[in-house]
Length: 214
Image (cartoon, rainbow, N blue to C red; front, side):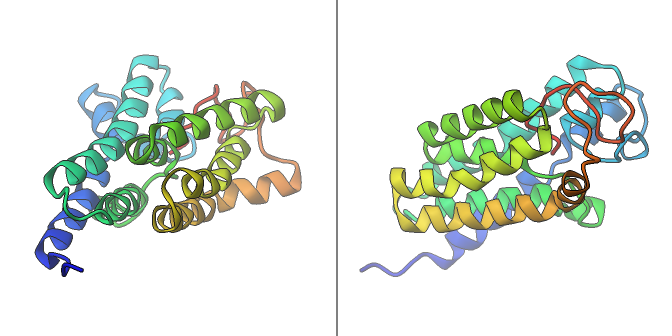
């Protein structure tokens, strides 16, 4: 068995983390002259909070940016180091960690679902599609965006185990745990019956449906 290329691992993980740490929502709203998105609504840097500015185009751009950086990180690592089969899954974890804990924002990032969907699609597009459809079905059924994200994250490791095996599934499980941790406030509100439903106005997290309260 060939020894892993340590420098390749370090470069791939560092690059994936830095790519994942790009705060798309914060950058887009500042370029658009809307100020610091962290001072609006829930203070989150994801698409759901960007939508509270009233600019749907910026929210869509944030969603695509957060999804795209996860997708790009994994695909780039897979293309650059094809002889290292464990690297793409590790890059997926690093990219999500970058989004959740970006060094540029004192490690206070988003909630990670959009970036998670991006890395899932890159690792196995059927798994990514399954997770997205799970989110959509749960959102329609329960009318809670956060609950839909939690359910989609929870089912992803089993789907990845079926599609690609134990190592990738273990890394996706770690990602799912991180997504759940970052949704701790939403979980508390869900348990208290205080989480706003999709489309409901008035709560700090009230917003139209988006898998990227990220």
